[in-house]
Image (cartoon, rainbow, N blue to C red; front, side, top):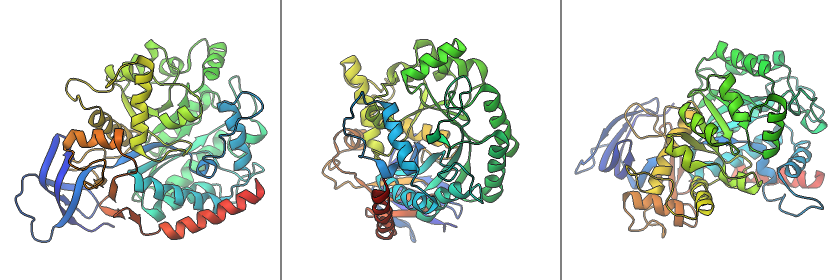
Length: 464
């Protein structure tokens, strides 16, 4: 359990604006109990924080095991390379990942996330069974490994077990490469019950669900999955891949007469529990309806660019007061600043204009995006965080004011500079629920974890 502590902070981004000479109090539960700006001298017993403090960022969408293949799919094949050819390569890799490999990969990944400024991760977890598709003796084995990895290195995890039943619309049977993912609804409900029993009330662990997609889960199955989690936690997050690829939109239209997001909005009462991951291919009506729903659009700009998915209509969505979060997805980028940069740059390239994702109340693109992603990420993961305010979790980052990209920058300009002009991360210290996890850019376990990760890559290299 965290110890109570008091921080004395030179500059900080609070929920209601920037503050100087801030005394921030944290209780034993890791919650912020007091914020007092303009305190001329450091109180006795307080800890001086050297740097600019901002809220930690939640990573709304992660497939941990894919860290082992990042960078290995950038060679042109004999045909047209696309999301679907990348997926085939991913299926080949996952046949060689067992529990030990998954835990080692996840630990390495989560330390890298922490060092770049993510304080929480939404693990969209579908690697459930052994390579033959048979459940492990403990059906929660692979879930326990990723949760254990997060606990070991100190990042919060919202664990989102995937329900995956079909290979495409119309209830087509799963493909061979998908056999490690598949549950029937009874086995899935049992998985949720066992995980809830093991982790209910455990610090820095939250349980939700992830019906994989409308391709993989029919309407009755989706309703049963929601009913199963509601029996355990009626506020648990619900995440779903949707409208990532144009082929999915065409197939959904053929089978339902509706586009994917429109169909989901018509058949389910979307609210703040929901995170629609990607939602790349939405028309104007879907964009505004999603913005009006209070659900989160879970955007992964670097992965979406890497896979050739397309560009989310962020300008229209945010003008409609839509909520969003960012995620690392395929793990080709683990830097939240780069995700936000690409989110803005994609809009600029489409519209041939600058400074698009901001408004009159917050004209700084960097601050607008950072605040929105931090709040939206916290909502997507079911966390009381995303802002530095009384009663919130003490999830925070300390940015190095001496970093060349930030030196002499003040307030909003500091966030603009971090997102748009820093080379290398300026994140110096990272706190999760009142506990320091990274100090001076170093995680205490990084060398041991990196060695285990290297050993896994050596084994995978021999097999793959």
